[in-house]
Image 1 (cartoon, rainbow, N blue to C red):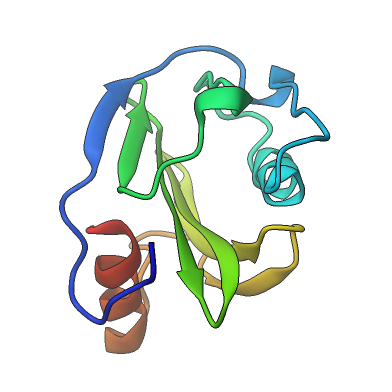
Image 2: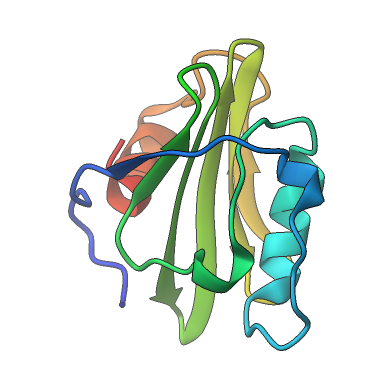
Length: 129
C-alpha cells in the first residue's frame, strides 16, 4: 500500500502478551531486518508477536493494557517501510525503517511522543494516531 497524504484509519487493537525479545525472525522475510531492529529497540516490551503474521498494511495496536506497539507497513519512494511507535509508562518513541532495517526517520524518547506539528501529522498519516 502506497502511503497517502491523509490520516490513516484508527489502528486495529489486539491484546498481546509475551516477551518481545523472544521473537524469532525468519531470514526469509522480506522485512526481517526492520523487524529485528524494532525488537532490538524495545527488548523489554511485554508484548508477544508472531513474526510470520506480523505484516499489516493497516495500522495495528498491540497492547497489554500498559505498553503499546503501533505499527504499519507501507510503500514510500518505491521501498517498503515499517513505521512504528512504542509507548510505555516510561515514555516512547516513533521510527520508520526500510525493510532491511535502515532507519529513515524517528524521534522522541519521552512523553508525549510527537514533538512538532510535522511529527504529529506524520504519525497521523502513517499510524492513525
